[in-house]
Length: 235
Image (cartoon, rainbow, N blue to C red; front, side, top):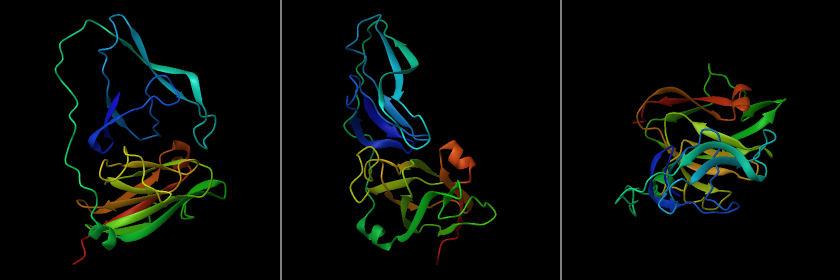
């Protein structure tokens, strides 16, 4: 199994998905994250039945639990007749330059803390208020956001309008399938065992009010959402 894309489109180059805690290749995604994979069935004989399973237990909203030895079957794949297939995954999928040191140095820095407040869910201590912006950004101005979780809860943070580049997880390089120079993302998980994240983002094309939020539906509905206003380019 080979990953070729995220929610931000093609990766710079393909990444083999390893067999880690299971005998079969596996990957972990949070709500709103997406992956695209290529699977080679040539080693399986006709009549073989393969299953795509969810093996990640989650007993509450804090974070994923144990990896199960047998999960919930989501899809069955029946291997049919062999066919001639000359296709192959190329070594490189698209040109992809990492954010330059100049752009990083010129970026505006912001911090957003996702945490529980008074029994509900807030960003920087504020509940969702779509009548007022939590933050404003200038069109074309690069920004570095530090996304922080206030405790042991995992939050898949989803930003509308623009893709992000993931720079660091807890000060270290992130995995290749989300790292700047390899991938663009519109959702990134923070908190619990995932740590805090630094991202680079630049709003290029559209002006007006947009939102970002936790994509755990209960958290989103409990007001862990904020409005951001994109203003005309500074001159």
